Length: 173
Image (cartoon, rainbow, N blue to C red; front, side, top):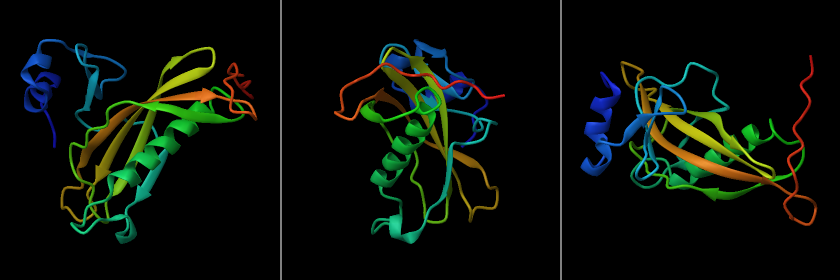
């Protein structure tokens, strides 16, 4: 699934009411529908290293041979936690995950990559965008296919699960 331009992607996937409000944001690989805060990945995946890469196996599949959505959601949660720990040393919990819409199925044998970007850092929370891509292992082209996107909000908590201020780790160098 490759698009010649962001506008072609918006026309192919997004509802008509969103097309006029599409704006490029976060990275060149993500589009935002400002009116509805929907994101869709387009073009090739980010060139940076994914936070998680996972080879999908039969144990993760349903009766149709596609990977359970819950498996992808769990990995999105873990990828967001890894990114959140760049902003806080200690406990973080997931408090929200925005609308997740699966654009393409993930098949047994696909290599799934989870890319993260910090969207916003607050006093006690951090919002993280997670972009999920699958590479078809048994396809001749080996193209990357956008699977889904999510914005996950993680909150730093103490031993009693009460929100606490983020304690940004000191860079070592």
